[in-house]
Structure formats: C-alpha cells, structure tokens
Length: 453
Ligand SMILES: Cc1cc2nc3c(=O)[nH]c(=O)nc-3n(C[C@H](O)[C@H](O)[C@H](O)COP(=O)(O)OP(=O)(O)OC[C@H]3O[C@@H](n4cnc5c(N)ncnc54)[C@H](O)[C@@H]3O)c2cc1C
Image 1 (cartoon, rainbow, N blue to C red):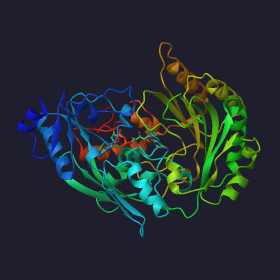
Image 2: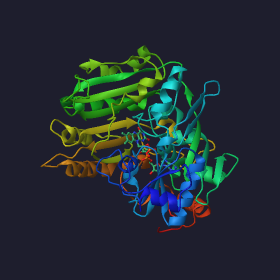
Image 3: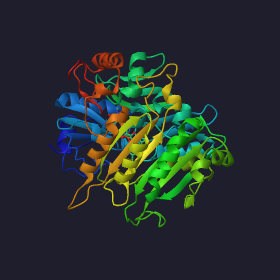
Image 4: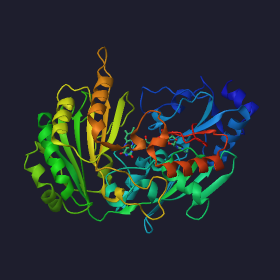
C-alpha cells in the first residue's frame, strides 16, 4: 500500500501518512541507536491533536496497533513494530514558557533542546537529563533522571497535566483532578496508555549554579572512583556529581582536547557558588585534575555537561542501580574500563536525595532505589566486536551490588513488571485495562492489560 493509497482509502485530508518506500519513510522510522531497525506498517506525521485522533482512527480501521515516538531515543526497549502505525510527533514541537509561574507547556514532539535555552534565559531549568536531544514525552513518561534530580526529584513528578488521544479517539486532558488514575499511570508507566499530544510541567528556579568537570588521565580511574565514592555521603542535595570513564572516538565533530583521547571525568552541578562547590569537592581536586572547567554558569550548560553524543550512533548498553561501590569492585571496574576497553563510556551518577522520598501526589514512578546509577555504552567495532562481552562482564560485576533498575535506561525489551512493586504493577494493569483493553498501544516497556501479557 502506498501513502497515496492509504490516504485515499482511509486517511483524512491533511494528515500525512507514509507507507514503506514513500518519501520521508526512513526519516520517519529512524531511531537514535543505529542498531535498531524498526519497521512499522504505516507512519503518521501529525501536526496537532486532531491529526493524532485521525491517525488512531486509521490504525483501528486498518487493524493496526499504535506506537508513538518523538525522537527515537527510547525506541530500543519497545517490541518490534510489525503491524503497527507509528505516530511520529516530530511536527508537534510548540513550546510555551510562563516565567512567572515557571510552568511550561510543550507539544509531544518537543526535545529538551527546544525548551532549555528559553528557560535558562529567565533563570529557570527543566529537570532534563544528560542530553538535550532527548524528547520531553518519553523522558517524562518514563521518569527522568538528570542533574537536578537529587534536589528536585524525577521529571515525571514535575508534570502537572498531560493531554492525550485515547485509543477510542477521545482527546483527554488529565491532571490531579481529571482522569486521576490515568494521570498517575502516565507519570512513570511509559507510553502505554494512548498518544500524548502535549505536556505541562513545572521548571525550577536556579538563582545560582556552578558546573563543570575535572579531567583525569584514564589510568587514574580507580583513585578517582575511590575518592568520589568515599565523598558521596557528605555531599548535600544541592550538589550532584557524576564520574564517567570516556573513550572519545577520533571524530572530527569532537573538540580537539577530547578527540581520540580517554579520561576519567568528574562532572559536577552545584546549586550554589563555585567556591562552595570547590570546598565540597576538595578531595577530588587534591587528586590534581589535568583540566578543570568548574565555574559559575547558566543552567543551559547542564545540557552539554555530560558530553553525550548528539548524533545517532550504533551502540549496546547496560545499566544498574547500586547502593555503593566497594573497593574490590572499583579495582575491577577500573580494569574493565581502562585504556583499550570495549566500553566506550562507563558512567556513575550520584542519585539518592529526593529520589529516596515519595513526593505528595507522585505518579507510578515515585522513587528509585540506590545511591548510584551505573550506565555503560559500547560501540561495536569490526571485525573484532568485543562490545557484548565487555557489557556482559560489567553485568556480572554489578550483579551482586544491584538494588534495582531505572527503566528509561534499560534499552532492550524486558518484562516491565520487574520495574515496579506488585501493587503498582497491578494498578498500572488496571489503568491499561480501563483505557486500552484490547492492548493496541505499544509503549516502551510494555504494560499489558492483564497478567502474563
Ligand atoms: C543519548 C541519550 C541520553 C539519555 N539521557 C538520559 C538521562 O540523562 N536521564 C534519563 O532519565 N534518561 C535518559 N535517556 C533515556 C531517555 O529518557 C529515554 O530513551 C526516553 O524514552 C526518550 O524519550 P524520547 O521521547 O526522546 O524517545 P522516543 O524514542 O521518541 O520515545 C520513547 C518512548 O516514549 C513513549 N512516547 C514518546 N512519545 C510519545 C507520545 N506522544 N505518546 C505516548 N508515548 C510516547 C513511547 O513509549 C516511546 O517508545 C537518554 C537516552 C539517550 C539515547
């Protein structure tokens, strides 16, 4: 079926529908991880909620299930899209910031990149993560862990209203007073309950910020991790530090000071002065970094502090939440990620703080266990691809320390019940049964309407 056929047969005027081979097909189904090759039956490119409702009507008439995506950053954890209509919300990127109330409204296709500069210009920040290329929708529906999480909690719990088109075609606005159970489920239960068209959330005021990084030779990873790990219990929630062992590929797009080099990097974001941050981080400074970029700055810097890749790339990844890094584990982690490692990046994020407390009116993802979020990615190489084995060794090393997982960073399909306690999972399934009983909406990390789906 060509798009022209599809449109003539079923599509309303104005809604752009693509079938395999149509112009724009590959861009519409593209994912951030180039190892994923999602092949939906049709793609819809809506510009507003009316188009989304029309797309869902097409899917129902054609006997297709429905999946949504904004950027494809989170596509890898979704089941294959054969027999699905993919609603690509790239054309719905409106952003409206009210500086007085710090309330933000975004279309479902907005990236943090569309929002963060406007917020930063008025002394605000969103609770975004390491990359501004990530979309608000998938990030917020799955939780959202970033630089300000220790102080302000998960992004999903900063969401104040969500608009979505349900599988029956109805356009709903859900908040703390309307469709209360659905509002609860959407904040942590992922994109399983309908196609979101807009989100409203609270940004936070950032009157003062110091942020930057200490770079160490990669050979000093064990020293850095030992010192960092010993320091964590003394650090206030205003200060968030991550350690990343990074092997930067020799790519032209990277700054010359990192291109083709390897470092152990301590990154820090402090809601306070530079001098106070330096005082709190003194033991790390005493290790004498070879480069030090910590300085007073605007919130916008938080979008690039982690030096995440901006362009799509092929990679495999793994993740775990742990309470601590014992000394023997640190030695092994340093050896596994050292010079010549197949792990392109091994990152340790200090979490805890507000993440350990259940906020009033929280969604399905209220808290996360653990003090440290570990995430690693490995870019496969040819002909000798060591990426899978290196990640398996890392998994083996982390297994005895693991206290949980953060679903947004689990980038392959799994039984999603493992991310929730039994009563939360049951409640999510009940919401699914109420709003999508035939299980037509494909979310990332699938919530079935009944047990065993
Ligand atoms: C480079 C990179 C950096 C990252 N950094 C962080 C980080 O620091 N912290 C963190 O918490 N996470 C991080 N993530 C994970 C990220 O939060 C998830 O991948 C998230 O799902 C991405 O959302 P998206 O909308 O950009 O992705 P998409 O792939 O477009 O969407 C992901 C999923 O969200 C749902 N969804 C999207 N749009 C809609 C919609 N309109 N209606 C209903 N459901 C929808 C769908 O289930 C979809 O499968 C990172 C990922 C990458 C690749």
